[in-house]
Length: 330
Image 1 (cartoon, rainbow, N blue to C red):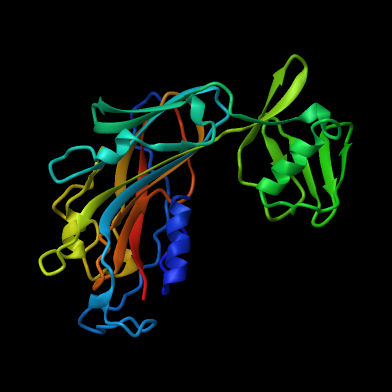
Image 2: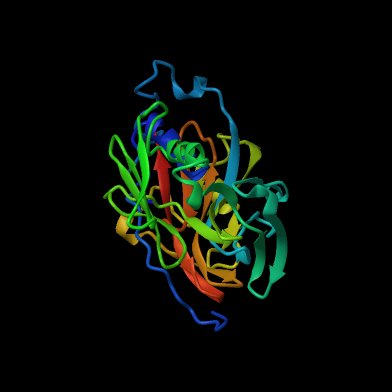
């Protein structure tokens, strides 16, 4: 995740939303970057929030919380993957995994906690095609409105924009002229590809042929869950103690050693975490994150750990490298 650390509450909220977003067993570490971590105001330095006339102790204290987010993009009609889970101080899986919120092709996604040789894992299985978007053969044509709505949902154009939509290059390209203008092609992997802008369209939209029709589907599924842990006893509990109460399964991150010691060290010295992940097939994109927020009014710090962007999985067990950092706000 690119430099999520922020120095004001607005940027913190934006960062928070972003989070909500082979068969051979050899260690293959995915190269990751380390976020920059900056020092925050501590209780010893300042006892009031500079943006508020009220002392910190007048603020309404909220429940400490944890959350997890998994994003998947795959053109496979059927797959199963295992990713790590958060464990409490007794090595029990957190209750939040029992009722995840699933969006994007949600009806075809199932989840469960399973035991593996590396520990507890969150199993995610998906079957069937993704969400139908439009028929390539019918743009322009009867699916033009669906195509335009898709562009709008992607933020590529705005409602009411005048677009000239036509096929070019012997039907291999759909051109939407007007505004910036976009050109989409179906590449050799049967994935829709934006070909004429530096902006790029990072979504995975794949094409399946059905009775001679080229149907375009969204290959993305998102899984989110969160759990409250009660109000921190600020006169007895610190943020660091809250962080120490959790462990990441199938990894070399173990409690009670903290992932990050407070105050934070030099950003260049932040540790990495090796975590086992399994996929039963070649898998285009997956990312997952853990977010721990003690809601401490004095030492207002939250901890995130996860992949930095998308990770490509091969078939079988493999190790991916996780990084993390502290989110501060003034």
